[in-house]
Image (cartoon, rainbow, N blue to C red):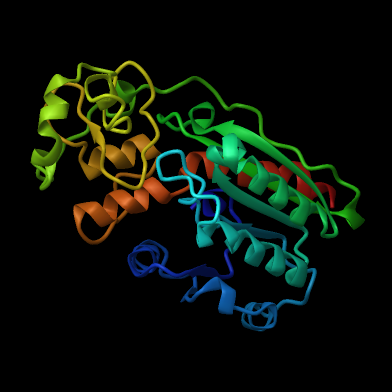
Amino acid sequence: MGYRMAEFKELLAIEWESNSVQTFKSNFPDVPVWQKNIAAVSTDEILSFCQIKRGELDVFDGSPPCQGFSTAGKRQVNDPRNNLFKEFVRLVDGLQPKVFLMENVSGMVKGKMRGRFIEIMTGLKSLNYNVKCQLMNTANYGVPQSRRRLIWIGVRKDFNVIPSFPQPTGKIITVQEALQNLIITEPREIPGITTIKKVLLKCREGETGAKYNNGKYFNCQRIARHKPCPTITKTACLFHWVENRYLTIQELKRLAGFPDDFQFLGTHKEQWARIGNAVMPPFMRALAEHIKKEILANT
């Protein structure tokens, strides 16, 4: 969505998860999307479908699955999903785009995952690209959510351009500011809340469940209205600051920077997962506009 906001022409999207594909089609019917395992996609079929030659693509963007690196998960070094970055490297090598962008979670540079981060940097730098990586927070780019992400930008070496990143775009937006004038039309009582209601009832505004459960439920939090929202993860775990309920999908869309009319499909769990796994649109727009104006304009 960020590339569209920056007025790029999107040639192709590739995604494996069914609900993600249907959600994409519902919102971007004019953009082709393949539901395929990226490991089974060749550079030749991408070039043929997009009717371009090797080296002509302006930007190749990808977010290899991050659950194996996430601090919200089990952080297993040998999680097979951690190796999908190699498919990203393979496609960059085959397509030779002018610029590539890769996004992943901040947990990749922490503790036992540090070795995998070095492995990824080594793989990307082995290509014909100048590469830089920066830890960025979406709250600095118009998103009312504190969400730290690693962003890699690579520029093909024949252009003699050093990768750079956008500067913060403006003031921090709080939860209360983001949800101002929102009229909630969906049910406020979400199935499943009873499983952690005892935790929720103990938490005050801004507190996590870990405070009352010996470190457990550290991702369960009653959000603070006067700050940006905490990171929205794939699993429902954020609660209203006053009401004893999960946030609604309408609220999540505002807190992730999606338009009110953006359509998420499926169950509450599936919709929450799509938002939790997304790259926040205003953040992606800032990156896309920077690439267009400050990098591609100099190639």
